[in-house]
Each structure stands twice: as C-alpha cells, then as structure tokens.
Image (cartoon, rainbow, N blue to C red; front, top):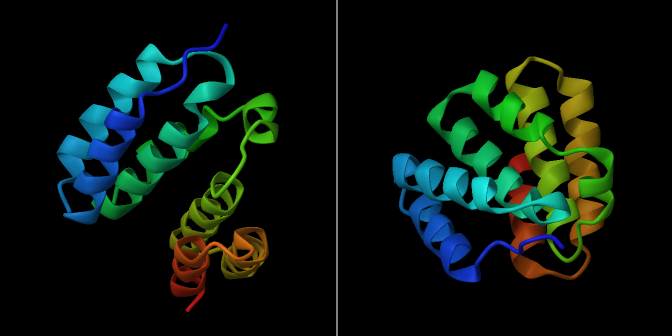
Amino acid sequence: MATVPSHAFLDVAVHALETGDMNAAIATLSATIRQSTGTSAGPARIMLTEAFILQGDLIKAAEALGGLTTDRVEALTGIWPSALARVRGRLAFYRGEQASAVAWLERAVQLAGTDGRALGQAHFALA
C-alpha cells in the first residue's frame, strides 16, 4: 500500500515555496518523496520541480519531474494535473521551447477548471 505524503510536510513545503526559502522546500519535499511509495509522491515531485525552477536549476527540475511515471501522472487528481502541466510549460519555456511551453501552459489553464488558485497560477505562467 502506498504511503500518502503528510499534509503537514506539504504545508511546510508550500509555505517555504511561497516565502522563497527554496532550500527548506527542497529538503522537505525530498524527505517526503523518500518516505512515499507508488503514486503518492506525485504532488511532492511537482512541488520539488517548482522549487528547482525557482532556484534556477533546470537540470534538477527535469530530474525531479522525470520521476513521475505514467501511472503516477494518471493517479493525479484535484489541482495536480494543472500544476504538472504548468511546471512542464515553465521548463519548456526556460529551455527555449516556446511553442511547447505555450501548449503546456494553455493545458494548465484548461485543467485548472474553476480552482481560483490553480487558474491564477496557470494564467500567470502563461503571461
């Protein structure tokens, strides 16, 4: 049975990301991923990718995202499919792949649906 990442750990990581403390976010998310199994590490991997992007480390961001296997992607629910599309779009943008970036970011907007925060983040990344 998969271990679900603790909401407390994810809350700590979200706070660290929002306050710009990438080292704390990376440490918390890395520990969360190590403790998770199966499909439950998906949200933590998406957030870890975001932290590495914000830190400017595109290689580590791609590696973190590369850990999301097809079964993990298919298991994502809620805001996470939109968040995944958003970080994929941001990575493509920073790699200079503008057409791919726009496609991923448009997908993020579609997947956000009516979730205000996810929609706002997707629109901000697209702008």
